Image (cartoon, rainbow, N blue to C red; front, side, top):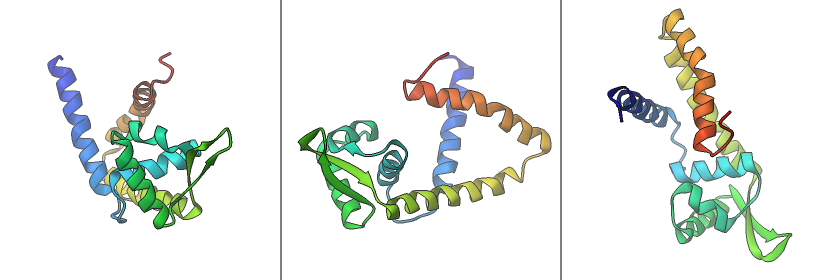
Length: 144
């Protein structure tokens, strides 16, 4: 890794930490919020498919889904293609919780952006296409 790559990685680490702290405290762990976001944006998913992307064990995901279900944020059902499999979906209350976190983070970030000069703001805006491409690459999406 070059020194420039290390500096970029360090910048992203710092940005991630800031974004994490900007997120409103809602009683949801980062993993719970991420799981709800995944269900909200990707639709219902098999319980066995949720744990890998979150980096936790299947038993831990089962416990998390049980808690989310108890709190009314997610629900379980049978997979129409295979009645033996469990499918998890987000409830309206879960979608609202995801939206609340996103809105709070966006408002806090907007406040920080106000502290930038016009030139700095334009630089951040100009970097968005490259950042979106990094997100696609991280998800295993198109590289072209």
